[in-house]
Every structure is written in structure tokens, then in C-alpha cells.
Amino acid sequence: MIFIAVRFPVRPDLADQWLDLVADFTRATRAEPGNLFFDWSRGIEDPNVFTLLEGFADEEAGAAHVASAHFAAGLAAMAGAVAATPEIINVRTDRSGWGPMAELAPAGA
Image (cartoon, rainbow, N blue to C red; front, side):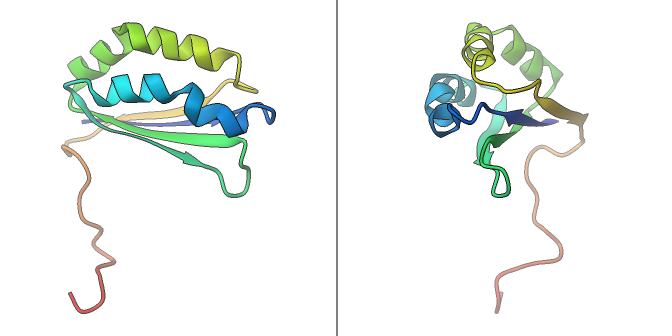
């Protein structure tokens, strides 16, 4: 699996519209055959920063994502809304998705 985390610093005047701005990109990416997850969160300490966690089945799925028309359209839409260059972590792992957390389970389980 390829695991990617990206932090997007968004212009304050556009932060409340960010999820709408990336909605088509998000829908199209989630529909890709090799996409495992594509989830946005908004910063608590800084609500102008959005974090994207994404997973792709393998390198081919990641390459297909980057080569897609919706990827190019998504970048074009985001370019006018980011306040600075986003930061990224991109790693390959033997996992095939999320696994259980060893340190925590529901009480009584």
C-alpha cells in the first residue's frame, strides 16, 4: 500500500469553502479502483490547515491517480486556494489498509 498524508495551508478567506472546492476531486478519487481511502480533516489548532490521508493499493494505483484528469483538475482548483506549498509524507508499506490499534479497544470487549 502507498500511504500519503498531505497538509494543505488554505487561505483564510477560502477555508470554509475548501471541502466544497475539493468535492469533485474527492469523489472521483474515491471511485478509483486502486483507492483504499481518501479522507480530509480540518485542523483544530489552525482551522486554515486541512490534512488529507490517502491510501492506494500499490504503485500502479498511485500512478494512475496522479495521471488522471481529475487529479490535474483538482490541483488547478486548489492552486488558487492554498496559502503556501502543501507538505507531504509518502510511504510504501506492506499493509493493505487500516489495522487494529493494539493499545485500545472498547471497554468490555
